[in-house]
Image 1: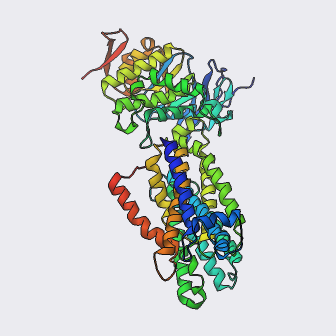
Image 2 (image 1 turned 180 degrees about the vertical axis):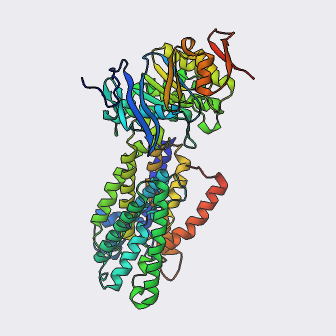
Image 3 (image 1 turned 180 degrees about the horizontal axis):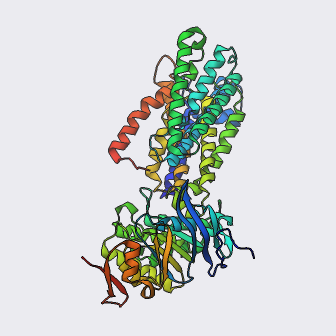
Amino acid sequence: MQAAILVGSAVLLVAVAGASVSVGAHAVPPAEIWRAFADFAGTDDHLIVRDVRVPRTVLGICVGAALGASGTLIQTLTRNPLAEPGVLGVTAGAGFAITLGGVLGLAGSQPAQLLLAALGSALAALVVYAVGRTAPLRLVLAGVALSSVLAGLSLGLRLMLPDVFDKFRFWTVGSLAGREQVSLTLPLVAIAVALVAALLVTRPLNAMVLGEQVAHALGGHTGRTRVGVLVIVTLLAGAATAVAGPIAFVGLMVPHLARRLSAGSIPWLMAHTVLLGPIMLLVSDIASRVLLPTGEVPVAVVTAFLGGPVLIWVVRRYGAVSL
Amino acid sequence: MTAPPTGRPAAPPATRLAARDITLAYGERVVSANVDLDVVDGAFTAIIGPNACGKSTLLRSFVRLLRPTTGTVSFDGRDVFGYQPKAIAREIGFLPQQLAAPENIAVRRLVARGRYPHQSLLSTWSAEDERAVHEALAAAGVEELAERPVEELSGGQRQRVWVAMVLAQETPYLLLDEPTTFLDITHQYELLALFARLRDEGRTVIAVLHDINQACRFADHLVAMKDGRIVAQGAPADIVDAALIQEVFDLPCVVVPDPAVGTPMIVPTP
């Protein structure tokens, strides 16, 4: 049953990825997509597929999986259904670092922005851990508090210097567009490594969800598991934010949908999440290209716009599965 | 051999699982000081005593949830904190008082989590795991519930499922913190009979129990605690009398033979 759903999700992901390569301001027929790799002729279609659409789709898959997986981990660890990757301050940290870099004239190039975002997420996470240690509730509170302070500072700076920050709009609303010029190898490798770690940590988490005392009596390293999960969440959310900007809602919502399918098993939950996250983000990204006749909307607008009603519908129709 | 700091002779542990001269504290607050306990191998031991006397705390120290500030809890002569967590979890199983199952989980899947200490990060589900889960479900009498979601079960059924989870762990030692609290009297007796049967099959059972009469009926060995100290221990028939109950619980009573099985039974006097 679980495996069948997983295979179904995988097939759906392949279809959605195909659509993501095909659909856009310039539609590419499926046959040309195939030829762009099998029989490259340098046509516009082929160049668009190879240089724009495929990298963007790969980015969407990685970011979607990263957001979904980090959301699942942080919700499971904190037993808080409202937790999302940004709750540890990484999203606000990246945004603030970019804004501050802009003020200081350091954020001119995309690689520089990427570096700033990564540094900002890591620093914010470190501050949150220093305050919250590993107690889930304290962590969440520290993360929320730091996030609002950083978001307020960022907003203040942007309002004072509107011209400078017009070009950093990207960092207020996340997007998968226009990232082709930067090398994303390092962040994507970081995401891939962290995703493997996320899958490995699911078995210890399976014991953790029975309660700390039971997990301990079963021979779980509860402290070590908690620290490991937090490091993985920071890596995933930090890398995703660095390459795509803040994208809300995927990390909050995908775990809720996946939890319905996973019958209380964390390994299955993670497997479903890693497929549903990219599906949701790619669908949103495709929508972001076709919703407006005049141009693109950032994908983060679409995830919030579509995600909110979908989540409400699911919860009302089927009820939420609590933690 | 030099004498320990307390000046008492430190007898070597007489049993596989033993506490020697342990002091247990939460921060500055000392709950128990200089306690010795040899857990009788192959017996059903019941720990009794009034609320906040340190029963659960003592149990917690045996499963590494609380590190003694002095003294050691040893298993086979080695400090329990010196073991790899999974290695000691294959010897000593523990069921805490507060239990919460994940939502949506089926009984069989919850029981299967008891196999955790027998698995590594990447090992797959083995025939051995399958057999252990099957036997645990049967022993706890919850086979026919195997595919049901845990949250749909009654309190008594749910407690048996958790016991099955600990049984799947296949530990020779079973530590249970107030396993019968919140259950109706029928389920209390069923569960205690199950523990006695597990003892008969060779396991060592240690349970914190509130009902003295039940403890006397089912346990081979009673440990009576008050204010963090062990006041008396031994077979129920040897140690339970009105004076002990008065001392431990501050309750005037008479002790009569249980009309059904002959073990000591306390009847409070007005």
